[in-house]
Length: 56
Image 1 (spheres, rainbow, N blue to C red):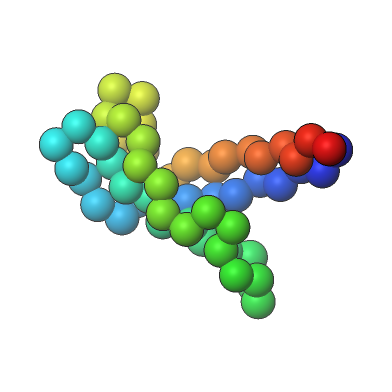
Image 2: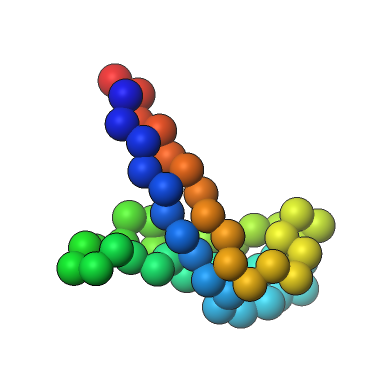
């Protein structure tokens, strides 16, 4: 099983959600691109990270 931590930074705030854009590692393409997180969870956070585990 492989694991990757992806960092995101604030991009835009909508009515009920916050859009974050991926900060790719140097020289690598984005894995997820932009994501939307609900405001009740994201709050006013400017940076978040997500861990992805690939199962075989």
